[in-house]
Amino acid sequence: MSRAVSFDKPYRIAGVDEVGRGCIVGPVIAAAVILDPAKPVPGLTDSKKLSENQRNSLAKQIKSSAVCWAIGRAEASEIDRINILQATLVAMQRAVSQLAYQPDFVKVDGNRLPNIDYPAEAIVQGDLLIQEISAASILAKVARDDEMQTLDRLYPGYQFTLHKGYPTQRHLQSLQQLGITPQHRQTFAPVKKILLTSL
Image 1 (cartoon, rainbow, N blue to C red):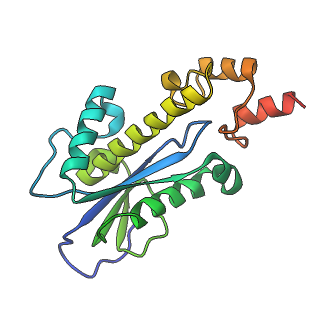
Image 2: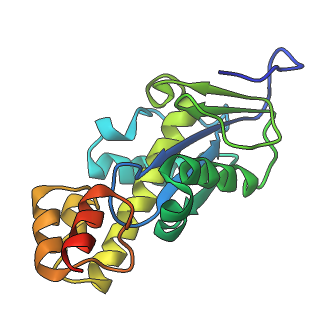
């Protein structure tokens, strides 16, 4: 899926990716990155293929060497209101809109484009294929993991730093024992089930 481009070689390419669609707590977080061709960052790839230490190290390099970068988010309450797909696109749109420089072209991981006013292309597995998207995937992942550390301090006992908000057995056991938090996505099946059984 793509939108027509009126030039051959765009100068500023922004990569966009998100993290957190499959989680049942917290926001979905997107990042947008315009890399500097004169300052390459070796080792960029899909954030899921990197260790936490590798992601954190690369995130620092990306932030220091990129032309610009930005984070966008959609909260759990927004996800419940407009659904996870639409919330993901909103988070991506917010990330792109906060870039310090306007991109000439935007490359988005996946098969859907957010509502942006730039020529753009959606690329399946773009986080593996396109360096700008790889960089965005790393920044988004690090930002959401930091968010989970914050939630872990706010809501002790849920062990958010371990499962990162995904519906693991440990997370589901915590929900059964402690109940849901205001940050849980109430329209997601595991949370909805607990809400219904608590009525």
